[in-house]
Image (tube, rainbow, N blue to C red; front, side):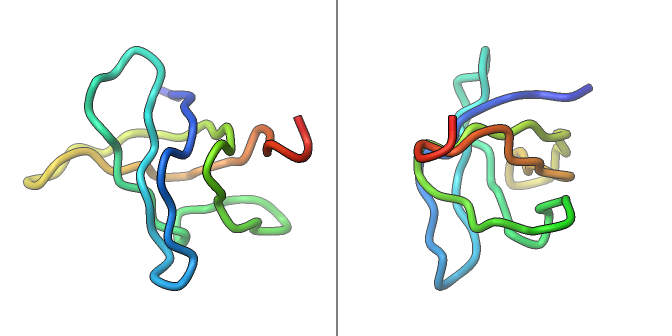
Length: 74
């Protein structure tokens, strides 16, 4: 199933952050190694993304992340 959400926090130095998914109260871990596409943009706070969800022992993790829109390019 494909989910959509918005990046709520991201650390570009460490390459990870968290996404708030629509209809989900849990924050979802996002790793820049899961970014897909020809040009892999860095995630920024406010970026809209779509992704698959993988549940692990610690919590949920976004996989196959695709940027839908950024705050500067809606």
